Amino acid sequence: MNQEPFTWRAGGCHCGGVRFEVALPEVVEAQSCNCSMCAKTGYIHIIVPESRFRMTKGAERLAEYTFNSRVARHLFCSECGIKSFYRPRSNPDGWSVNARCLDEALNLEITAFDGANWEANADQLARLSLEPS
Image (cartoon, rainbow, N blue to C red; front, side, top):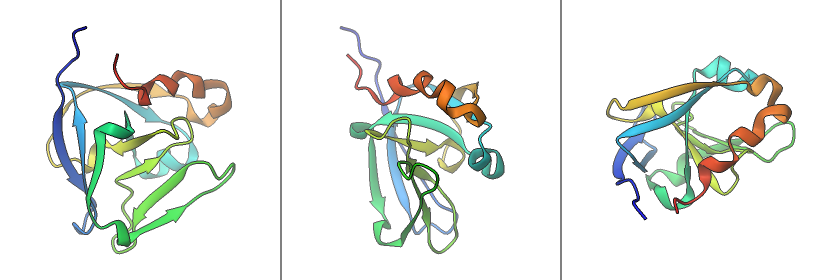
């Protein structure tokens, strides 16, 4: 079993009140989604398992927004309004981190995801929060 090494990368919101770390490989798979939420915010998804995400500061500053099915937990800084990460409906056992909120630029392989037709396409994302074998 040859598991790809991960490096912990830091990120956060605009004002710095919310901070997190995420363990990522050298080349990172990411998605650009065209749903109503992501299209308006420019969110670039990096979906990871629970074990590869940790919040380091500001849990008390998080506000939550849910809509439609109320499964996705959109979390944002109550001070500056930035959504650095959230619990996605497609991967409720993992996290989606906004690549634009990481402190360092990454080697991203971005694919388009048709979130405007979410029900027909959500199964494409389910594997992303699984632990590597």
